[in-house]
Length: 194
Image (cartoon, rainbow, N blue to C red; front, side, top):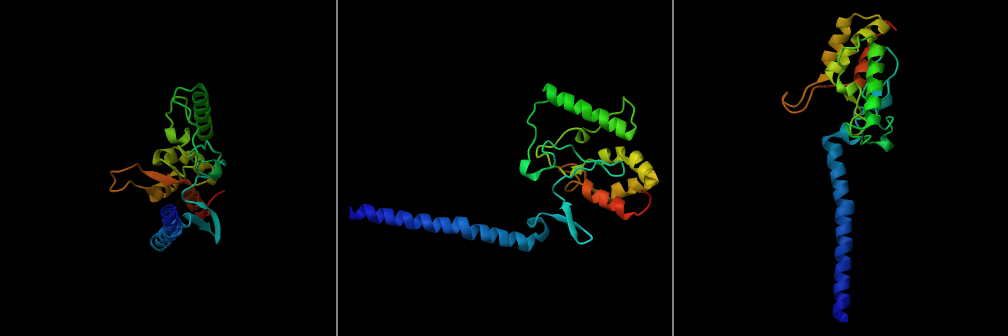
């Protein structure tokens, strides 16, 4: 009987020790290291404008007005607590209907002909439903609409897109992308037009 209690006591001590080590010490060490090495990222990659937090570089926002770049659609309505995709297959009728409607909206908003191809990221939600980036092609497609609404030359907006395009690591791994919130902030900073 004494041996059994001794084993239980040791198991309990081991349990408490591992709980403190893996549940307290390790998370504190990783958090401290992250804050030291990556202060912005560990705090949410917030974007500030005029001293106020207006969003995160990691979470998309819904821009609907004609004078702003529009981002990817969200299956989660841009709600970080409801993050996730629709999980509909490519042959699902509801997904096909939704994407077709989005294609028609993009064509109408941007004055595009019916035979103009639309980049997939403008009409499909990402797996998280919160992707903050679009492809440079999606941004370039929106130039005429934004230039007209803001009374800016197309070339000015094209330069802004080029300036804010992030290229893949070594230009090999990944795809080029443009952060929509940062691009729209840059548009607002031009202070020309509407």
